[in-house]
Image (cartoon, rainbow, N blue to C red; front, side, top):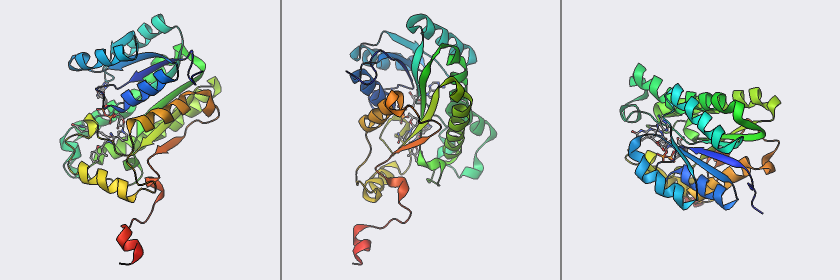
Length: 265
Ligand code: NAD
Ligand code: 0WE
């Protein structure tokens, strides 16, 4: 028996087979969930539809989370197709190129608003719109990154957005707790996805991560998928408002040294 047998799970933020959303979708499928997939932009349709087919997903809807009307329509369509929803995954973030390459103090008002709107407010908007259709014991989750807590060079406004996303996770968890709906965040280590492509210095940061993390390994979308199964399932029944690190232990290390330095060579 799969851990998510009979649960209706919606995943937002699938772009391609490298997406964290894809790792989560596949893990949910393995555990027996009924899947729904949402993506943004017509351009992604030809990439997302074949992936949805691979996991036998019949509900594939386009939804730009900056549009209140699209979110509302998507929630209504989901309710019509699934009845009630048990799991909602938010795997969405965006900041303009300038915001991720120029110094943080040069962040424009528009760039700041846009990053916060897509990467933070969208979780609030989705929770609100889907609330009437969520089962008791439902689980909502989002994806975050350590750049919310400590400075990750160039992550800039995204770090500020992730701090707000993690805080939103706690406030949503507080509000929805009495309804027995849980809200958590997964803080993943760096993964080579579309959102990481073309990020200046990502390659070196990715390599450094595996050298510095206690487990000495990079994180995969499969790793994140498995942790998402835990947060989606009743195994995590009393866990809410939490940030779960899936990062090979990287965040626990305060002073980083190379093996040579450790040995005093
Ligand atoms: P990805 O590019 O595959 O996914 C990001 C998704 O956001 C895309 O599907 C994109 O279409 C969607 N999106 C952007 N604007 C949108 C909008 N207006 N409406 C709806 N969807 C929109 O990259 P990913 O790395 O899988 O990112 C997924 C999540 O994981 C993000 O929240 C990201 O911040 C987080 N995360 C990524 C890493 C990493 O290293 N890749 C690490 C930790 C956390
Ligand atoms: O959350 C993310 C990705 C966020 C992201 C990435 C991009 C690149 C392309 C949001 N918006 C955009 N917009 C683009 O135009 N990560 C955790 C991956 C990531 O992104 C970084 C990182 C890491 C790690 C950006 C700068 C520095 C480090």
